[in-house]
Length: 468
Picture 1 (cartoon, rainbow, N blue to C red):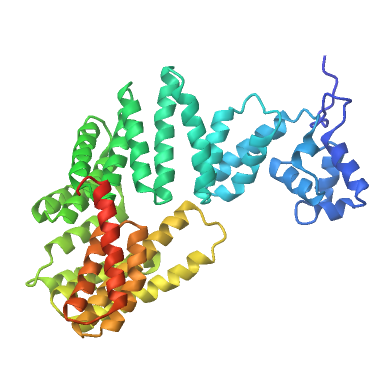
Picture 2: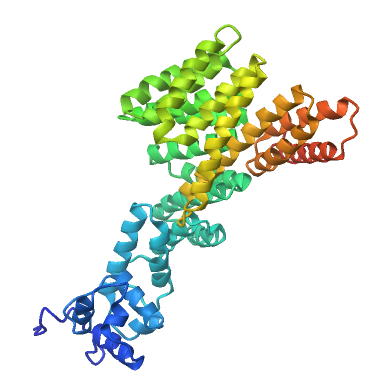
């Protein structure tokens, strides 16, 4: 029969020493008061309740107290029966992850992962994967890749059906981690491993659709347009077999329309975009709906209707003015691109400068954020790409004006961005602008150096794709 009182929430098995008593002993050894230890963490009253065993603190509170006492968490817990504390900490970390606060979850998961003993309710491999996700989302890609690869190696040795299913997800996690680290070919290889492993079981159409979409997106990213189109079509076949898939279908049609826009198939692009618009509107995906509408406007813009196209784009930019300045800047660059098409270089420059003003402000905001998660990293990468695009358009303006020094200066900013993000079309355009300078007979070493760098980069990546 258990005669312990309800207040003894942190009693241990060895000598009936409580966690609170251990904290009190360490505090007194260091000559600190309860108020001094509690400062910045909890109230002195709560500190007193913890030491007397009347309150069980959260895992995060215990970690903070351990830091204040300059004591490793493992030493604080050594010899204690702290299963409840571990499980509480793990659940706390999961809630932080669910809210996107990966930096807050990371130290808790790290402590648990390094613990000598682990609560029976916490699965080690699940803990390891969640720790890897936190590492990835806080840009520690090397550690995330190491942890996931160790799990891949473990599950690859198992023939159990459930383990093979987990292995598919692990390959996808690894692919996403490589992608976030801009390692696109490594990401593609891991995605193909996910597909090959899935082919052995074929029991989850939703997972199959996710794999195919991911493969299509990566191939499109790498300018392997034929392969991307094939994967999108396969994904469409899978999605059409599912029910209640309006949102997924809408996004899929949007991606397919973007692909056709990239390869210069206007009729097919518009057809797919119209299908996407109806589905996205039904699903309430307003941002995707607007992006697809923008795609149609850009595809239909020509020298006869360019003024109407600009009017629509500027109206859309107004809608984004408050909620998403980055998309507003992107629309200004669309407008600048149309002005470039009709050779109105002055207006092209005006809208490039408007976009750059917004993008510079966004860049400063991103840099001041402490919690640089993958979401913020992705936003920063999108910002870089738009800055590169603005500089490329401005370079065309200054080339028209024969101001070659400014062209080179702008492309010196744009080209590294395009290389980092493997933007082959933009690199080819940049190289073409520079070639026009040297074809005029101008001996410019900077221009030649930039052209050579572009050509070398294009050659390497086209060869990796099997084109050369």
